[in-house]
Length: 60
Image (cartoon, rainbow, N blue to C red; front, side, top):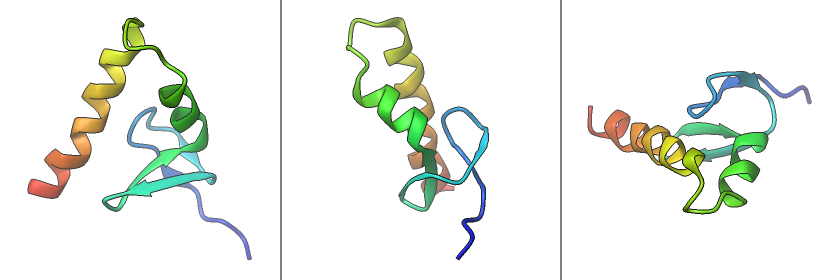
């Protein structure tokens, strides 16, 4: 069965591998980068901002 590409809520790229949280897709690359990012890293704030979009979408 062929996987369908979905748009990642973090990087906004079309990808086939990843996870769904509250019906929002996060690609495997972003998931791994988030898991391995230290809270002191500047990227951490970006990831938090992008993840908030999941709840904003759910509340709409």
